[in-house]
Amino acid sequence: MDKPLYIEKQYLGRDRGWLSVRLLLALFCFAAYYLNIEREESSRLFLVAGAIIVFVSIVMMYMLHYQIVVLNHSIRLSGLWTTRLVKIDLHSVIRVERKPYSTFLINNPVYNLHQKGKIRFYAGGKDAVWLTDRDGLVYIIGSQRSNELVAVVEKVLKNNKPIE
Image (cartoon, rainbow, N blue to C red):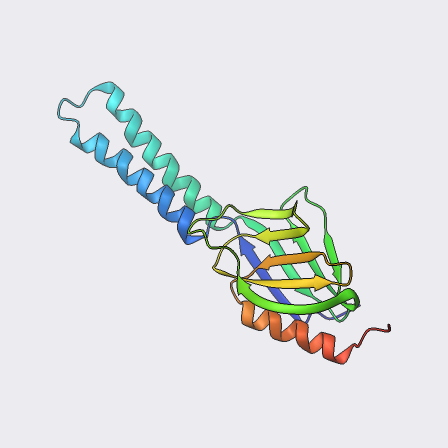
């Protein structure tokens, strides 16, 4: 068995942008409940909705979106529940770069999204590792520790020079 050189877990609810959106929505619900002067029965719906939003946010912070495992010859990305295991052969990788994932402030979490010749994996953070293979296909892997991931992949590529 190959011993993992790098392991990183990406959680679904830990992205600061979407967490801020959920908490602002919950804050709005709580404020609407407390500002209702007459305390009608229907205003309790805001209290319940705010509590549900906070509870769902807490649960999502511990929900694994995908896991990155770097082995001697491959990168394995295993996703949430029914998603397939994605294996990227490092012998076919010709370039490794650390770049920003996107210019947007808030990005949606994705797993194995094929779009315009790029395959995206993202749960949170600003930076990503961009891997280009011999066929020109680009893998964009969002990472909280992108510097470490790039260093490990470059080390593997240097030690295991592919046969042309």
